[in-house]
Length: 494
Image (cartoon, rainbow, N blue to C red):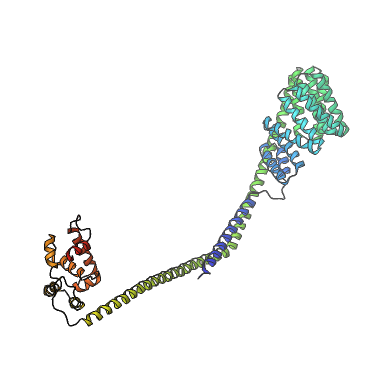
């Protein structure tokens, strides 16, 4: 029976372990189901969304990618992604968040000696400072970028920084310095045949020439921008070139040409919008198809999990039944053990009572033997004597043989007692205490020096009744004269 608690404990531990394992497996399946597949590069997804102009989706992908590389501890990737996040926030017109990302990226780039990335953060921060019209800080940041790109000999990045410097000057209405840096940007782009940058530089040059009123150079710059854009087959650059030509013709008073190029600009703009919509629609369809495929895979996986878990469910059910059976068996044996202990305790108490009774019986037998011996030796009886003489043992034994069960018995007993103790009853009357017949009998037996059980035996009553009678007798006695019944008895036998 002592092994049952250990068995029950083992069953409980096994149940908790299996239940915890099931819950852990389900949790792992749930988490894995929400993750992007490992084969997909989150940064590439973000760049693709950035290219398409879906800046919010790009922000989501870049954020996931940043959390992943941060968890992996890849600080170089963290710095790059922070710069990307800054660009997305800038496009979403959240310049404060963009500036925080650029500052964090710059701090990491400085610690990791990533000079090119540090230069890019300077350029990007200069753009925000330019929009805030904080030209002093914008120039300082962009000049730091120019110095880094010169040191690293990065013509493409240097061209972008020069172009950005020109933009800062143009926003501050400083056209000559702006023109200088646009030309420097164009020169760097030609070094590496960076056509995208060349087109941008000619567009910005056209804007400056238009503002300065130099029609020839303005139209020449705009046409060069359009030609390079057509070579690139870049609708974005073509649209910008048409827009610049429309503004130049409007500025120099050729309204028909301005309208013509504006229509061209509008047509390309509409094509871009339709292309973007078509591309987005295709992407949405692809995403929907991917979701449907993932749902099918998930359903198949769920069915497989259900099939695999059936055996586990059955095993768990059998284990639960075994646990219930073990519990009831343990409870049954516990009750049996408790009853056994209870019976042992009762037996022990009973044995104690028997021992006490045996002792009382031995005492009673010894006392009874003594009395019988006295009675046997005094069977003949004795003649009445004066109370002044001491009664013989034979006289007392004769009285003790009597049973006072009826009035006749009491009359005979009283007659014999009066013969032995002639003045006892007269003293009771002289005391003035009104006693009942039962109380008188008690006093008589007390005069014979009998104990409670012997009195009860002679009177044919219980020892409890003897005690009650003595208590009533005590209450009748004047307390100022007799403190106890024994004191009153001493008065009677003096």
